[in-house]
Length: 628
Image (tube, one colour):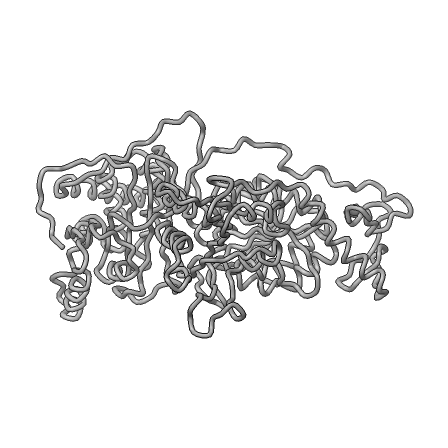
């Protein structure tokens, strides 16, 4: 560990870099990283960002639990995940830095720009904490550069907590030679509703950071971008889902605020009224589901947005939507659980509850977007499926997609994304409300007010006339028809594409946001001669066809997921007692193939290095025959 000596500036050209900005909660790390990430993307770099957010609104400052921040990985080529470790970090204090050190988030030779105010702080206890933190971190070869971040911010603003982030942004702009004009435009957009003086002060802070870095730092990095002619957009997954909902023609979003899904409604609230829609903030999660179902029953295109705990509360209403066959789209932005769990952390633990969460047999479609771009398209697909098949469609994203920022090609608008005119023509005499086609299970959606279409709906078992019926044959028929629709939909799906060879020693199967990390890990293993391939499932109910045949071409099949499974060899864990990852459980039941799994639920995205390690362990088990 060394403190930097100032020398002539060395500019290294590199293909990519990963940066962390870590602060106390409330010091603006997210805003700094947001602007930096978007600037990189607008300059043509591939980008992926990950937020570090404590669950508490404002935990005690200067503690290892108060860490708030953001990780930005950017490079010349497309970036699909947050990578293995950060190579440069800006830390506003020693304790938030220590928290990242303990999580092994920083590369052994990471460059760390640390605020210098803590080393000689007037409070003896703070100085002691600083010395202990630095001593603990001395086991690594970090290169520390002490920066008077707070001191420099105080030259421009009275409260350094409202200025340090923009000073840090300026340093990053100089280190990575970012286009300052893009940064200034981003700042102006973010503070567009504030007095002009706010924008001016923030830009002044950025310029101050640039000047300090130019005068005091002896390193720079150049990350080139590949020129492109196509029009691209930059956003996070929640923004993409919100805009996708509008592109799909959804006119009503009913929701109750819940982390990490709330920003979907923020984005919608700003723009949906311009397209003839509205956002309804209900008094609770149950009411939000009820409002969405009511709007859909009346003929609107309805959406409800939530996360795991909200899904639990919506359970009975979702079962009602399935029973009365009202189209409904549910966006579940997954977080850690159970119960309140990890409100601001990523997990993929809602798959089984999304598949089987309602009482009785309640078939529904479940889709899991793999990328931020797919968050946009998944909403369009979900709307079309929900209305075509008169069913509930659950879109499962997660906190990794929700808050991560990535650029993608601006999709050309397509009129087919929108709902066509509702059929409110007179209902033919004798046509019953549930006149199921016995082959497909489909029936006409009768909108209230359609001449001749008067009928009631009920959550009780009903017959084709929508009348309560407890007769064995009508109950059996209703279940058969609701299930048949999923089989018809599944017949339209294609088998999943494989990344890699079509056969080999190991097939790694994932779902949702893990795709980028899995592909990077698999490519790493393939480059070393291992016969590994991967496929990422998007449709989880019904499953994509051909899985059993695909699995048969590989000696081993293993899922990689961000949820819990028992580790073989742990106390009391054997073949009879072991609990598998959630997708592994589903695939084992569906294909009768001995699908193994490696799962982890650390509250953060999976890293390629960890997936790679477990791929090798699966292919090269230890002496006891158990993967290391």
